[in-house]
Image (cartoon, rainbow, N blue to C red; front, side, top):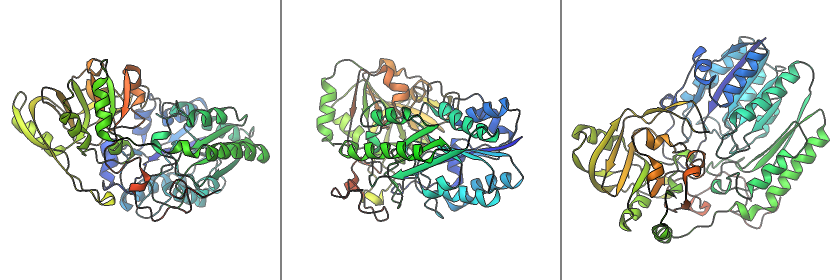
Length: 488
């Protein structure tokens, strides 16, 4: 048996000014051929599950590419073609099955439906070959995606700590299909709603209840997708997909139950804002740390620039002390600190290097003075529950110690979902009073177990949780909450 398996993942924020060329995928760690198996086999990620199932079946594994990049603007045409062509060439070489780890919210310069376009092209080459697909919980599901595969599933956790579990489940369906023991039937649908990402944590309502319904569906698989509201495309929004063994009615019944539950809870999918000054003042009153301060409007895990200084400026203005910041992306600042050397005092114009035309915002640097405490190459291995075992790179990295605040400054975008963002540069986050994180939900994977309190700080940036700040031009209308009177 010959199986093609590949990963092609990007969550595209169409409002983000951060470009997405092929080099951005290389920064995260793009791999080809046998290197894919070597890198991912011992991880708890989807490809790790696929590889284990293929090994158990005695199959030959063909792994043309595994590529992922931190969320940012639309994927460059060259990068999209490079990744999709690698997969298509492998399929054209002959295969008995195809196992794909996709995201579901990829927008490229040449297509608004990166995954659907890829799958349709695969189907043209291999019209009857079984295909299974794993997607992110933030997938903007499309008809092309469902119509051109046999079994599609999504994560049930946010932060995404169930990649291996979900990959195993859809892979088992695929292998049962190959053995003639299963005839997968899928049913899917959308609701006219942009669910706010900050309201999609699966430990909280409304998503905790939605996931419980999906798990209790008594079908082969049931997935509810929150969607990704920062993609201004026609099919953005919440959806559901179910898989049964030949029973279309059962698939439709569970699908409709999930869609109804999504719609009935629509007001709960809207984040309620609070003045930044009040939130930081509240943080000062909390005595026991670590207190997590979430700069969620500049969340690099949703396409943020990671150099908006508004929240950090307010933290400094109000005099918070014993703070660690993870992290500011400013390669020029890192270079200046490296030139000065460890132990030297420097004054920097930090961050604020990126214009955000979608919000009409110019970059605003923050003047800071401190000692160069640490310089590293930024490479470390994730040991927490999300992306466990994967080697990541922050690029050249430095720590600036102002006395009250230790600021981790990096050269590559990276969301702080693992304690390694601090421990890799010698900071023990467990003993800080405040941890300022440019994250919104993924931080929970590594930091929730040590947090004594958590506050969302409403700054500015292209991952804003306020839809009214964004000028939507392409999303289907009417849609909630942009059009609050719409009904499905």
